[in-house]
Picture (tube, rainbow, N blue to C red):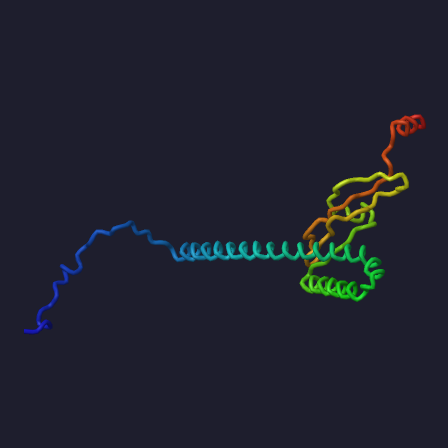
Amino acid sequence: MSSLDKFPDWEESFRERPIPFEVRLQSPSSEIKATLERYSAALNAERQAKEQALNIEVMALVQQANYVFHLAKELGRCEKSLAEASLTRVYDALRIKKDEMLDALARVGVEIEDPLGQSFEAVADRIEVQGWLHPPDCTVEMVVEVYDPIVTYHGRLAQYGHVVMAAPPEATPDDLSNATEYM
């Protein structure tokens, strides 16, 4: 007798068994909604990770822009001394390298602005004032010293300029009393 001669007991095979957890049947639309929410959360997490990585890269570019700005200032200060020491070739080589660095930064969208000599109104929204000077010959508020330049990345402000401003001398108490006499 072969195993084919004996039929299985279907009632024993298909008896009701307990389910180890509660089964909830969901509509196809709620399953699609849940899947879309999972993918949306994953997409948002990926976008946030990319944005953080971009911010780190932009901050590195801003730091390089600061270094190039300060190199340019030092070269400007040393130009005459280097020429007097017959080191014009050294100066020219350093100036060329500085220009190449500026070009490389510009190619990736980083622009450096030196606000020196500009009026307060022209740069007020792109600078942080580190201090004020009140020389007697000053007639308008203007930038007189730049610690860090204004740096933009693809036209958007990436770093505020850090500057010292000059302004007309502050009014003295005598000036204020004279002003009220005329009113």
